[in-house]
Image 1 (tube, rainbow, N blue to C red):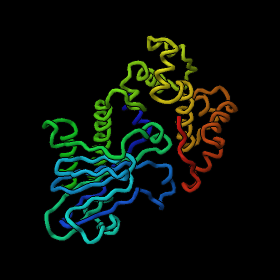
Image 2 (image 1 turned 90 degrees about the horizontal axis):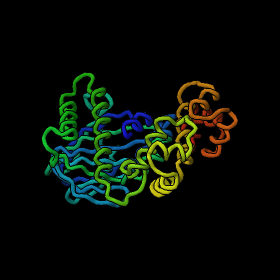
Image 3 (image 1 turned 180 degrees about the horizontal axis):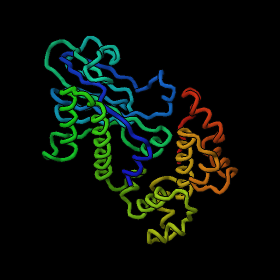
Length: 327
């Protein structure tokens, strides 16, 4: 289920920074935004920082502060502004002002600080569709820290991080293509672990995956969003009653199953409008609507604009893009 969702959000990524800092140092990184890209508002960026050597203090956008050390993998799902430091730096340098080009195309290097104890860090990103990412993944925390050094040798996260480090150090031709695949693999495994560690009573999309009834309901809706589902049909498939399905779904996701399905259909349609030149009739049928008129009404109800306007705005420039709609 998680793998299918990640396919839908169009993941791409790679490593963008190989950095070495020496104490005392302090760095401030702003929330990611690329004003040059015509589609920047429609992309969601997540950031990884892997501490290869050394240690420092790290502070996320929500004020959460952690002492991080070699072997720690930091994941910022929403790429919010953050800062990190060691010692007592005189200034907090802006990250964008201390980077230099590297031997690998598309990657940067940093060698910055006061000459004391060193911190080596590899930084990567994942890019996805903002329209599809936001409503599903919004319940993730601002910062997830995975202790890679505590992983058993040979586990997927530990081996993937080692592979990333080797490719960065080798700087061989074609490295970025391989690094992109490794970043995607790392993201999937981190999310799997996050889901497995959620405490009882958690709510949201990831918690719903652990619920035998709601998780199965999500599988059905995502596997066949064009089907004319009813709560009764869903209940029959998951082996429960309509009342229990509706109540548990609403308790975990804050909306009834069919309302969720409508939102997911519109999100999928929004992506198809953005990519390619399918007719409205084809898109409408593909997401479960028997007529363009019914599809257009549902689309406008969720996004606030017609499908035609959505296609025009998302295909023209990001400055006109709307905020993500929730399913």
